[in-house]
Length: 245
Image (cartoon, rainbow, N blue to C red; front, side):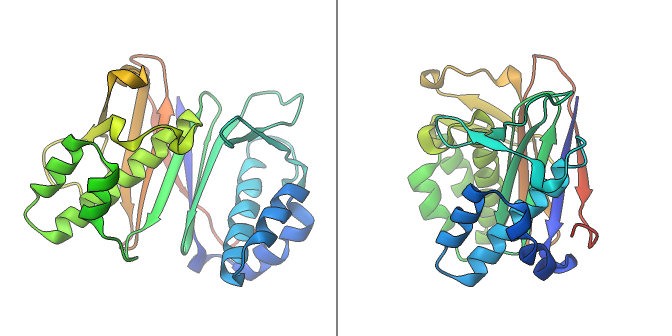
């Protein structure tokens, strides 16, 4: 099973062209969401990320970017609504200041998250509020504030990827599941963490696989995919370039 993870660094793209093309590519629902943002930078970020999503999806089926249609589940997760595709395509989008991440799979629901790690964040305080007691304890045991900050973003991206893969968002309490990491420094390497669940969630670690990694000095990304027990998942990282316009 392969999962493609498309990373887009806005500094490497012709973002003005992408944003200006959004009127002719995005559907009416997306355009309405774009226009509800108060600040131009937020409208531009939304337009760029959603045009990128459509252009990525067009690599997986013979549809032009403007031809993709979406509907939403009960909790608002988008899914492809085009009829008569030869093969089901699952996707997820995340964007942050300066970058976006698109995950695509033919085989299973997927969730992705990307975060800009240089932004201000009261890491330990946020962890106390949202993370599981096990995660908070492990984070507080790290000897330096920089290590705590790294671990916070590792956990945050993983948790977001899981609740997005489930398609339920924050309807799933973040303190009802926990991630653990292999021994050693995870700040500069791709890692495959393990998840455990509170019995109230009724989920099994055996059907989930995750990947988490830093991207450059400024971003942290994670992906989650539901599998059958014992399945092998290959996460393939791909970089968008200036030709995505």
